[in-house]
Image 1 (tube, rainbow, N blue to C red):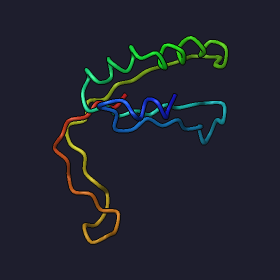
Image 2 (cartoon, one colour):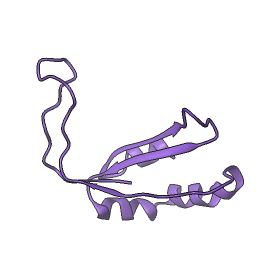
Image 3 (cartoon, helix red, strand yellow):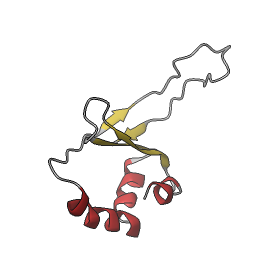
Length: 94
């Protein structure tokens, strides 16, 4: 699922995380260039397979939040190796 999604146009990141306080909690963090790219993602065959399989592997509540990010800025000094300049491109974080 993750590999196929990361190849989709407009996908900036798509990662799963296990909760530090609760190892039974799974967090999916995804960033998209546009809302249209996210909506196209929901229509892909691999997303349909993923959604169909969820009830068999997940128990409990599934919640979704969407954040509209206006600017992205690295938290590093410009002289550090991992520094990335500020981006003015809006993103969809879902």
